[in-house]
Length: 90
Image (cartoon, rainbow, N blue to C red; front, side, top):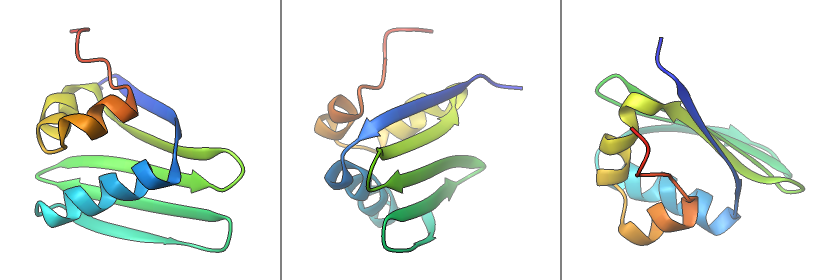
C-alpha cells in the first residue's frame, strides 16, 4: 500500500481552486457539505484525492504519494506552492 500525503491548513480560496482546476481538467468531482463543513472527492484514472474543508480549521487533502507527480502536473505552479507540496522527496 502506498504512503499517503496529508496536507492541512489550506485556505478556502486555495481549496476551491484545486477542485475547480482539476474539474476543468477532466477529473471527476463529487462534493457536498453544509454551512461550516464541505467535502470533495476528486478522481481520475484510479487516482483519488480526498478533501475536507472546515470553516474553523481550514482545508485538508489526502492522496497517495505515488500520485503526487500526476496531481502536481495538473495544477498551476502557484497552487502547488500554496499547497506546500514537497516535490523534492522521493
